[in-house]
Length: 210
Image (cartoon, rainbow, N blue to C red; front, side, top):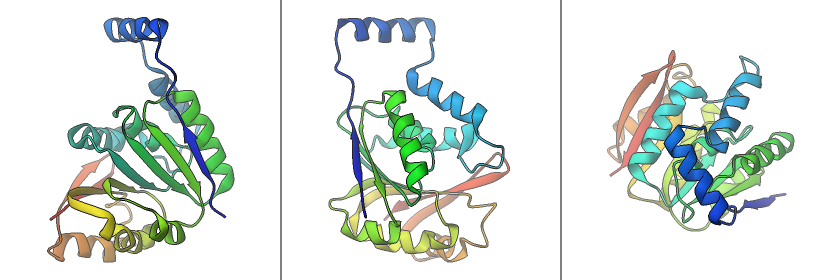
């Protein structure tokens, strides 16, 4: 069963505009930053969120690319979805896939609390079953789920990528062996321009579709 939840932006009014200007002027953390900070402080050290260091690489990629449509495979508690969403405007959409219903529900709550601007849809189910039935194209794909399935995720979504779309794969150093088929494909197939960016004892493979 696939369940879709849309998180809409809060209606902008005079009070919200004033608070945003105050936040920018006085460097008050946004709601999204507050939620991210809470997640970082409360999750177990072995809980596989992307974390602030590799998260910075992902955020920089989103900020540079300004994608209108994003696909994330592996929502977990919503950390990386919020991280990406806070860099985007209300005309963007993030579709994030999570196989575990309890994690998906926690992610939905975290996303609501973050009050991000884009529409974020959390779909519950197996990514290998959901990706083939997704409609439309994606400017950015972020992979952070079962490592030895990265290749399968990519091949399923590949026809839904533009020339210039970017695929970011987490844990490309720590799980390089499990990701070997994926890494060999993006590095040597001739279909992508790909590079490894190291951070926090691990790395992210960032691949641009040619």
